[in-house]
Length: 298
Image 1 (cartoon, rainbow, N blue to C red):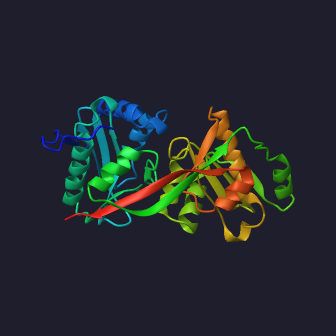
Image 2: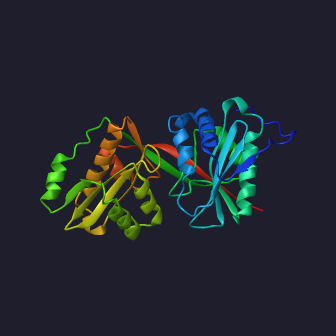
Image 3: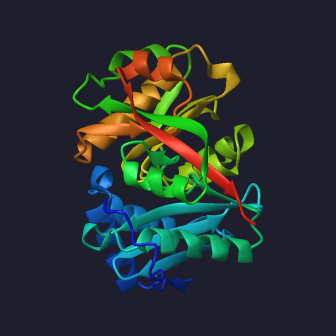
């Protein structure tokens, strides 16, 4: 990306609290052109970020050829997130990324944030941070005084792998455990995620494209979801009483099979903790690495 001319004024940025369909569509096309690693899902990401959990404070920031989306953390209102920033390749080198970032910081200050981060705001986020291959974005963050605070990673699952579960489903049935594609009973699974984990996971389960769960004697034992963040797998969890039964591997493979049926060739397992589980269960490999940046807002 060409270096911006810092001697001239930054481009104007509009703060749009409630962007309409046309503005979201235009922003999605900018994101598609700019975010080459995520071009296929970029418009859907923009629309997902524009439909966050109830009560989240967020805004769109628009300039000719550029878009940013910012929000305030629900867990810590002192933390503000720059959730997405994209500048069309034809308009790069004009200071638009810098202008969008500064405008986002100004909006976050107005919302009471004391710190700004280039990092995902769960449960509704685009990425954990800045993909290390988006070098220009990392350079922009560092030029603005952001410091790298953490590293996160995704794993990639090849959906041409064997995702069959018939033998395992029969084995679990012999232990009184049944496995289901979650339909009208999703609220039970949402409540299970809320009780055993947190409200963020409950929101993701409620908004996922697909959910599978296991139960015994009418009690939910575990779940797996996909598509709460477009095209990605997760979250997934099992109750302590079900660990060691192999429930997680079955639910994982059933969700990945759904994603394959939806036309995907690979699936991203987002913001991974247990590398070994996913590697052994479906041969997933650690692939996307993200730097999380932050800085204090004066």
